[in-house]
Each structure stands twice: as C-alpha cells, then as structure tokens.
Image 1: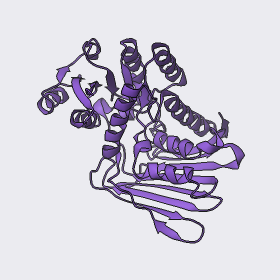
Image 2: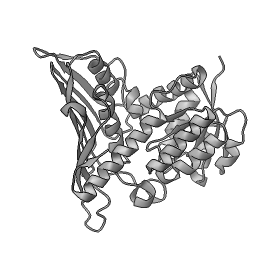
Image 3: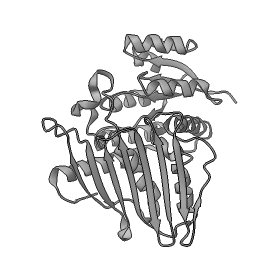
Image 4: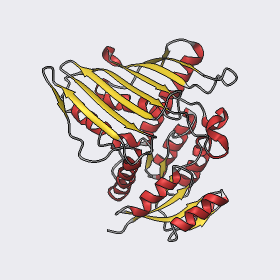
Length: 341
C-alpha cells in the first residue's frame, strides 16, 4: 500500500518534530512544508530535502498529491488555516487546542462532516504506552468503578513561542487551553463510562501581578455524573517536567508517573503501579513513552484512519469537548463560581 502523503504547516519547535515523524514513518510521506520564518524554512529544507518548502500555506494546499495536512501553528491561527485545509479537500491533523472558541470548533467539525473528511486533534497522550495503559486498566475493571482521578503537572515555565505568541492572551486564548487541555481530555477519557462532565470549579493565580491573565498556577475540580470527579492541577512555577495520574475506584487504585528534564525529552523516567485492593504490582510499560514517541503513534494512527475510513482515536468532537472544558474552567476562574456545561 502506498504511503499517505502529508503537508505540514508550521515548522517551529514542535512542528519540526512533526516533520521528522512524518518523514520517518513507515506509512507516511512528507511532501511539503509551509513556514514563514526564513530561519526555520532554511532548516526545514536542509533536514527534509525531499519536501517542497514554501512560505505560503495556500500553495501547499493546491497540491493534488497531498492527502493530509498537519497544522502546527499558534492557536489563534487554527480556525483560519484549518478551514482552508478542509475547503481544499484535505484531511486535517490539528494541534491542540482545536480552536480557541466553541463556535470555531463547531465550524470545523461541521465543515469536515459536510465534505466527508477526517479531523484528528493533537491529544497524543491517548496514544501513550503509559497514559493509554491507565485507560486499558480502567476499561478492564482493574479498579472497579472509577470514582476519582487526579492529573497533576509540575513543570518549568512555558517557552515564549514564535514572536512571543504564547504570552499574548489574544493569540493563545488562555493558558488553560495551552497544556491543562491535555489533562481535561485524559480525565474525560478515563471517566467516560459515567458520561460527559456536568460542571467545573476552578482557581488560578499569576506570579506577575501586572499580567494576571498569565496563570502560572491552576487547579480545577471537574464533576461527572454519579458523583465521580477529577482534579486537574498545574504549576508553571517549578522545575523540570513531572506529571502524575492517580485514579481510585470501588475496588482498587492506579498510580502513573512520568518525569523528564523537559516535556520533549527522549530519555524520561516513568512507572505505573496498580493496587487491586490487596497488593500493589508494578505494571510493565513495553516501550518508551513521552510526547516525542506518542506523536509518531498519533500520525501513524491518522494515516491508518485515512486509509480505512475509520475515525481517528481523537476526533474533532473530542477536540471540541476539550476546548469547551477549558473555556468553562476559565469562566469559573473569572467568576469564582461553579460553572455548568
């Protein structure tokens, strides 16, 4: 079977990893890259000489050989560029967040549906050998009925992003959309047996009193049907990158942990423990885990979805839910009150 041909829009710090994974994939081919920065464009051409490199993403979209377009751009551009991708008749892989408003998410979902195209959203944790194994254990009944989840991240501050976009609230949307969005998605995934969330209460604060919108510390309680709930918490005021997920249920508990010098390390440490109500066992994780590894599985999974017509593991509807949870959490922070979905 021929490889699925990809175009990539955006060759920044994370986009360069997308390019590497697509180019190296057994089922994917990197046909073209669109990048505005002269420096990044030169690096893309040097590392991927087989790919056509252009400044204008519309030129990439006009190529008939490209089947999937991978968008790795600042958040405020996601809707504009994602819509152009779908209008051009290409399947779409959109980095998270899918967009920075619900209206824009709905527009992309509806357009893809009308054109019979796939949208996959960059919640790569669902492909993780570690975080995915937690889901397998939950679904297998390893903790009985799940009742509580804690997903927490302790890390160093965010990078600025190209032209400082990540610290511009108009372009980033809010910082809950930037990384806690992954944890909202995991919580909804882990507790999916009880249905979608029903309400959220959140708090946040900032180290810089002149920039209160840049919330370095954030915590939320997300309520699900039947009294089940998840706690999601992040600090950007710490060091390195340490994430945990802890779940308890009617018959046991799970503790998963991942640590690295930074989020994109190739050499993390990690473990998974399962308590069945009587004893604790270490659960083997068969391969390395982390964003740089899960990205490869995500892109291979999308290539398979395009070939088979089956939906990707994280659909546009999932991406919309993640954005909705983050926006409701920000509303709760602003109001200092519980907010219903």
